Length: 217
Image (cartoon, rainbow, N blue to C red; front, side, top):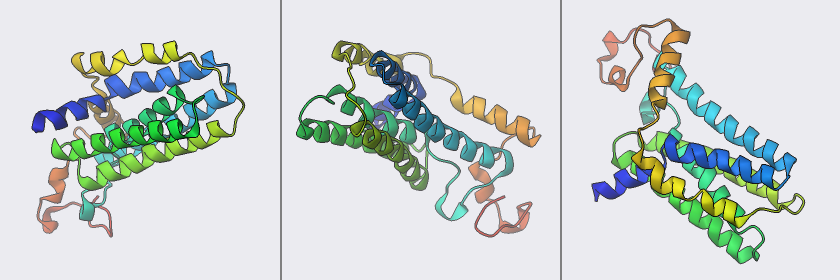
């Protein structure tokens, strides 16, 4: 079964979800819906920024919640929960509401499975995967609600379908070193020559540099 979880984890990688996020913006521009384009870019960008901010805070200064092993939102879970419900929703936006509900639910189900996979492949703790997924779902729900009350949006299904091969092809290409980029950013901002890791939570309390209430510093 591990191959299944690893496969799902790859579907949530930046190489897959990043291009889909960009593709959604392109679909919206093609439909000449400038307000929805701006809303999507702002929401998705804010979600990505929060993921990076929490990871930089931990890697650079050791800011995390030790009790639940939280060292930053899961980027895989956040991006998957943001892009898949929205992409599936846009694909059937002109269909009856039952189609839209079913498509959105399928996107949410896929995102939840990807979040679970991050725990199974031991890339994230439960708290990081859950909070990342919730953050992404907030992005998706906010956008879908906004899109549902906006003007009619004309989207080419062919344009949408042409982007689906990303899910199949992207996992086979060289992984995007996003985590390494975040590590370098954290070291640059904090002035440290190496990042904090979860290993600080395994050290005896007396050996930790700075005590904290609620956070591991």
